[in-house]
Image 1 (cartoon, rainbow, N blue to C red):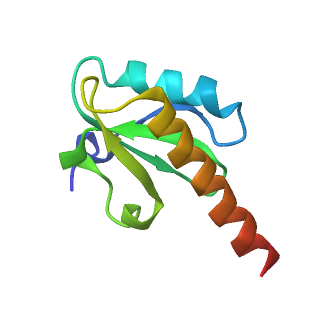
Image 2: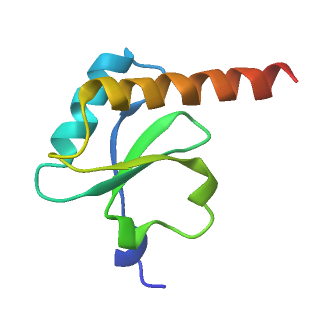
Amino acid sequence: MSRRAIRSRRVGSLLDEPGESARKMLLACVPATMSFWVDHNSSIHAVPPERVPAGVESLIVGTYSIGGASLTQIEGDLLAERRERAAAWID
């Protein structure tokens, strides 16, 4: 796999206000459909779906496009991810 294939860009943090993170994620979809994954440091990364790095599939929050996702939907997905991580941390 080439370095170009695994390049993603950070668009926010799971620790930020969910509505603001959702807005940034939707703006990242302006040029194309994007997949978003959250690393172990809670950073949200955007990458084209065909370039999702190997090994992060289980960390994907969602794949969105500008015409197919709403801020409310993305915010809900972020809140669900927060809950899942909190539950895993407590266990």
